[in-house]
Amino acid sequence: MNIGIFTDTYFPQVSGVATSIKTLRDQLEKQGHQVYIFTTTDPHVEKNVYERNVFRFSSIPFVSFTDRRIAVRGLFQAYQIAKELNLDVVHTQTEFSMGWIGKFVARNLEIPCLHTYHTMYEDYLHYVANGKILKPVHVKQGTLAFCYHLTGVVAPSDRVLTTLTDYGVKVPIRVIPTGVNLHQYEQPDTANLRRQLGYEPDTPVILSLSRLAYEKNIKASIAAMPQILAQVPNAQLLIVGEGPAHEDLVKQTEEAGLTDHVSFTGEVSNDEVFRYYHMANVFLSSSDSESQGLTYIEAMAAGTKIVVMASPYADDLLSSRTLGVTYRTTDTMIKNVVDYLLHGDEEQDPDLLTRTLSEISADTFGQHVIEFYRDAQASYERSHEDTPDFTD
Image (cartoon, rainbow, N blue to C red; front, top):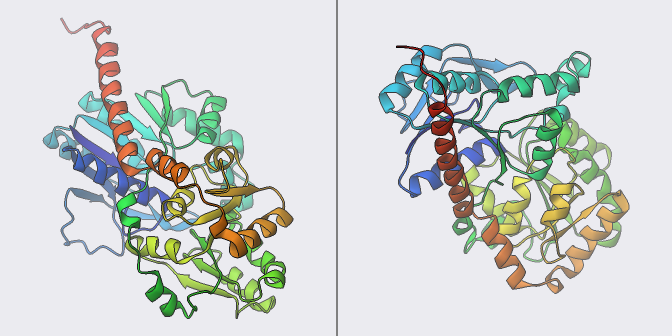
């Protein structure tokens, strides 16, 4: 198949969406399909630099999310390119500019258009005029408008499925969690990374890895450190990532007198992320806004115990302490982190970990998406066979 992926977010931007798209592209190409990325220009990509099968369209920073982009032109150009490529399927990854361009292309080429709903926008309304303009009802209306006339929607988790169903989305929805390239997590060089970070081989390290956005609630992880240190005096919290909350988190660390125990790395290359998961003893997330928890399964792929905020998705994913635990109160979070730091190696069930990793592998992810493409093609063809032709 010739597949066009339309997205406002793509590498070198760092985000869960960009990682998901890269994983999907790699898996589709691995199985012999041709994949073409239609995305926005990026200030970190020179105009004349060749990117294989990537087409970039003029864009500007998105309001309130200045590290994200939105296309300002390219509708008919994208259609012409897609026509020449003889696309079989359009797969949109955004409800904004490139998503609408993808829908236009699919409609005019008369091919199926599927969509992955990555972002729970109700968790982000505070970014726009402090939540005074956009309300949850606007998210619902916008979602229904975009999903109208789609052939199908990929929901990365049951939480997304429930949300879309509650909104009233009528097109077929299939839950397909983004997978992880398990081969990338084999034979890591953790000792060298620990030396680079200034840690001893036996230093208990808690890892926070995400975009440093306010909705990730990283401040709660920092705030818990004094109580963790009271029980594990040499513990370290390593915060990996970059984002709008960076300065406030550094300030919080300094004011709490935690600079000897809380460190910030800034943004890390996606190709290096796996080393940080392997190096850590515990992965900690205080976020309550995850639609699929990609970092959760990345940590699991590294065999690192995880402690994360409770949610239907996380509660279902973490069926055993071998994998990790969820929490609902700060006291429970601290207790679980300390337990894993002191006794983490005692919680082992290799067979369960193997089975779980098989279910969340990139290979499984790719297979399920391709099955959805083929089902969507068959459904699209049937629906158009039933459409009367009034051209005669």
